[in-house]
Length: 264
Image (cartoon, rainbow, N blue to C red; front, side, top):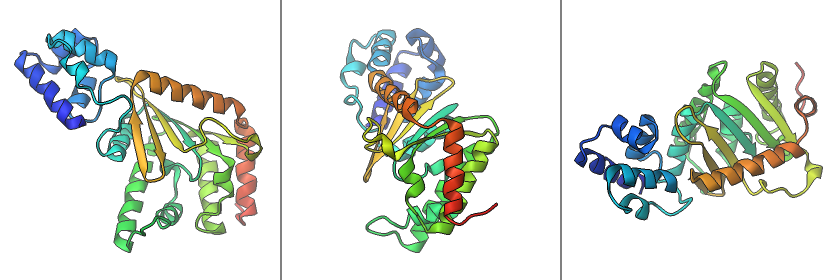
């Protein structure tokens, strides 16, 4: 639906004789946001669609045929990965597994081996390479800014065995110690929390509205409707207030890595 809507917007813009920049100026948006919508990578919010209709004199066509609120953009994970590469700030919440951009090769291999039906060796190897490619966004020493809120269960679940876990947790500790990542752990004793049903990735950008990617069992969804984005951001901030401070979170991660048998 995203690319179809984007094609439709481009046709309306070209029919009006406008460049992307001219439409962006008229609709009070950025040119790059217009480009993302036309390419099918983003779906405009209701407010954006109303401004586009006004700028293009299309009545309420773009607003009326907007995909349903909070619906998944086609190929949700491909969209989420593309957004991840563009983000200037990423805030992750991890419930079951270490977030993909922080995973080591052996941990990723173990995680990708637990699906059903199982991947064959070639499929798993390709998936591991793709996941490690995502992690390259951390090669830049500054951007994106990455905050990680991780349930303590992620530390306790021995994915791949003790040695793999020790290596994985030590990798995260080093990222935190180098000031590349901020980390907070949600203690198990906290109990239920609004964010607990699944993985959440909040993303901010230099020249387009924020977005959120949520993932559960065999499904995922990119949200960019402002009301839903704000709701998920608020839930994240609420959870952050209940999490351990960074110093204590780092100490817990070091101790857990040591328990798995790792010694620096």
